[in-house]
Length: 414
Image (tube, rainbow, N blue to C red):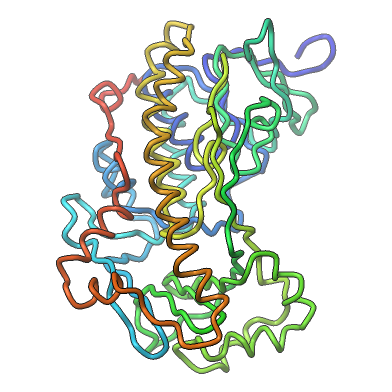
């Protein structure tokens, strides 16, 4: 504690945000001998997340680190296939089971369990420090170079001095805004209302989406309950809530694969959460002493559920490039630019595919008053099982999947 009562930390790398990108980067850097301070504004990880899909790409990283068996001891549900329903006809569109990985399926896992797992692993390294209930508020700069972060913690002001600050504080990143770096917004035709319904005997276990004229419902198997996503036109949330809970349930009724009696579980709108869908990307991810990764660099559409896994991939790529420079105490702008160059390509390609689906399927379905017809590709995927491996590869492994380098595998236990 210094004279003005600020808490001062000096470290190799300050990471804002204890989500998947921030904790994965912190874990891998600490494992490589780098001192890391993570600033997480919440007191714990027990929050209402929707990004609970752990894809084969992330499971493969757990395997490469030697932790897959332990990781899969956490509560989860396996999703080896994905289906879509148009009216009463159901189409099989994705089959992960043929991917050449140790765990060829999506693991539906509460994100708080995933984050606690990463945190527990990182705690094994003395260079790792997590400051919870501590929100990053301001970048500290000297001669045009970011040299740390000012934050607010439970005991007051916190100053973290570091040669590199990683912004992994999400799509509404405070530090990204502080940086002055520009963001390109691509728009989205929809928002999503999230809620839960109990899962009962006879429901089946298949994760699927159903498209009807003017509305879409996605149901994710979460073991003892269904995580439901009701897709609505962009900005329609307030009007729908104004019409009342009865109207909301009336719109849901024809989409459910079971009795509408279960809608009684939604007692009020407090249990219905709104996700305002964004699709955007920074024009440049870095400035001297500063780098954005994950949602802070590129907010993804929920299409494909790839956001968490893309963020984890960013973290792995960043850790591989940054470990040695951070141990030496100097990170050049060339290194930061190289990380952006490697990860901007998969972000761009993935967003282009998401926008294609948004504009040519979701937007049309939400605006349609007639029966929604399945696109040609959906019909082909259903009729020719071999073709289902294509979306499985794109969704499950992503564009340019990252792997744990030899240096990161070995780690550096203190």
